[in-house]
Length: 402
Image 1 (cartoon, helix red, strand yellow):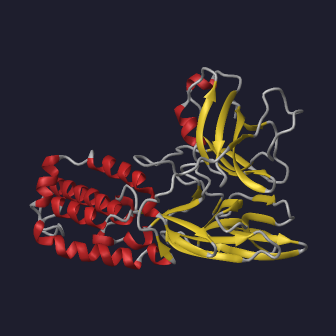
Image 2 (cartoon, rainbow, N blue to C red; image 1 turned 135 degrees about the horizontal axis):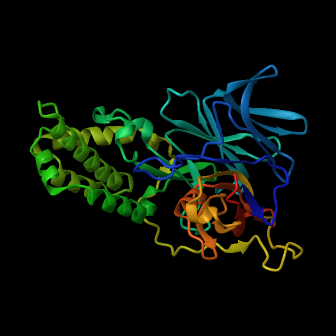
Image 3 (tube, rainbow, N blue to C red; image 1 turned 60 degrees about the vertical axis):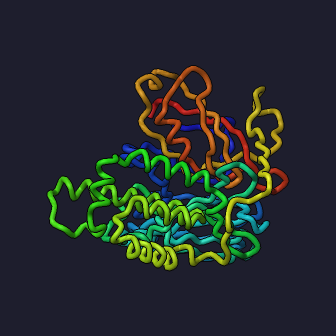
């Protein structure tokens, strides 16, 4: 059982459940999806009376194995999606940069589709569609560096799926793309987050063995020549990692570094072909959704968002500075043997103004890495101060009992 501390759920039906395995092997935490094949429901109400519902699609009174979502106000209703394979409420009441509280939905239309649509709706009366973005395998609005600015993190999955006959499952990740939505304009700000891409590049570099890279550089690049299954697998693995490095430079606004890395690691006779393919893929991918593009890191000094306490040390009778966050989706793994003996675990979270967990720690002597990793995927309606979404610090009690 998971309990917010102090209790704050007022209008939301929150589903807290065990997931095992929670994480994909060799990858980061699997995305949390609110409704999949009609299996969960969620309802919440914004402060102005606009309501959101995500749950099973219905044929009359019969629930279907598909999902639907709508926004309602004053006995009126706006259909967001119906008959979808998956629907997730990524953000609710969040200011993405327009000064307008918004709801953002991830919508996967069918199981056969690789990717999601990201639909952003205003929460004013009547709600209206502000923007729809397509082509990412996932979307998440978050303030990753807690500077008070919310970005939309996604990837270019639809564009690179099938590139060089590679499937998404063979990639550690599709190229990351970061958007900022403000004044009705969608801006590609990936170049402002070069340190994030540098971490990716360093991690991928560390996984490439010198011998395998040399063998790959001696190939034709297309990997069409007959080889043993073992060598073909090694060459294909290196090819993927080289592409991921080049993509990281290219998508973060460093084209010269991308081509330098390509020249250093790709078979020389195939460089021009693959370079043209990379440029065309990016040109036709999710990047074209942007109205404009940042040229590089911002020169302005980043500020740090104020983090407000959404709990009191002396008890719930003391008045808080903020309206505390409300849970949207909390997935919990099976607890470790050590923590199963505890009567209750207390987690302290920092939740940004988009409702995403930026840090998590256990209060006391207990340690459970899987619980911490799970907590970093949790989603909330953010805290509010003076009707404005803010970052907050809150505590959640987790019972080892099922």
